[in-house]
Amino acid sequence: MTVTPVVLVAAGTTALAAGLVVYAVFPPARSLASRINPYLRPSGTTPPSPTGAGPLAAVFGPMLRSLAISVGPVLSQTSQSEKITELRQAGW
Image 1 (cartoon, helix red, strand yellow):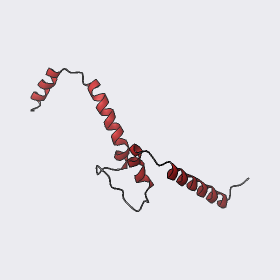
Image 2 (spheres, helix red, strand yellow):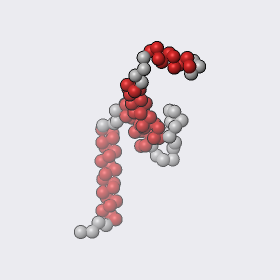
Image 3 (cartoon, rainbow, N blue to C red):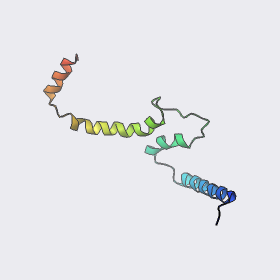
């Protein structure tokens, strides 16, 4: 059985139609919409980037920022007085 170009075009069109129907019926959640929608726009338009960074920073930035906020206190096990001393020594 060989796959002809007509079969490939038909399969691609069917997949695109199914994807558009799913997107219309079940739009992405608000928390994901800001990350997904820039990739769904036509490539001729440049989506506004909230931070001025590229698409990787827009997609992975919030996750990495959240990870840094949650891991930071665990990695920094210094006491309050040690932090104050370090800040004074740094010129604050």
